[in-house]
Length: 115
Length: 109
Image (spheres, chains in turn cyan, purple):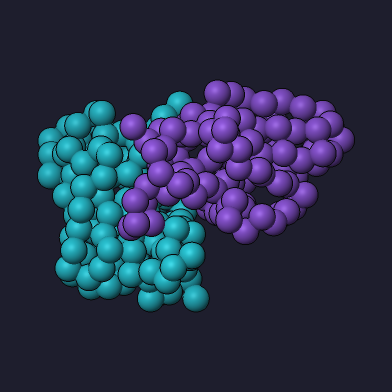
């Protein structure tokens, strides 16, 4: 039982390049989330999904797209990377049952640098 | 507006001293609040939630609706408590969390 797995762990991009971050969970969770973590800003929600085939915008969605084609996977895409997207990205997932849906399980993070 | 504020970026105490990490929130409804912790080289994980009213690793947190606060406390800090602590508020019914800026707790020997 691996929990939440993020790939890659590190990546360096040039401005304008594109990439996809993959998040996979093996806990059969319905809800999945993408956050970015920046110094002094805490974790900010980029996009989230409440089930397969559904996605919604979070607090800072601009410049990112997501897809949830399979229940266990949640992809975060950067179409044209900018230096402002240099950050640590975290994926999380949670149950749907009442009283537990807001206990989120996190991946180890992806450190992205955009030059 | 929904917001979580952790006023201290860094809190440094000596081993055995009491610890209080502050968290204030702004929310119009009935809040659900959490503390998450990230130890060095480990994943962010849930420490405790107010609805459970439990003590985890000696930490407790009481929801004070009048002061809109959810401070995290421990009577005697241990070196292994050194970590980044985040206070979080559930927003809406989708499990979304709003996180504070985080407080680094440093426990010195």
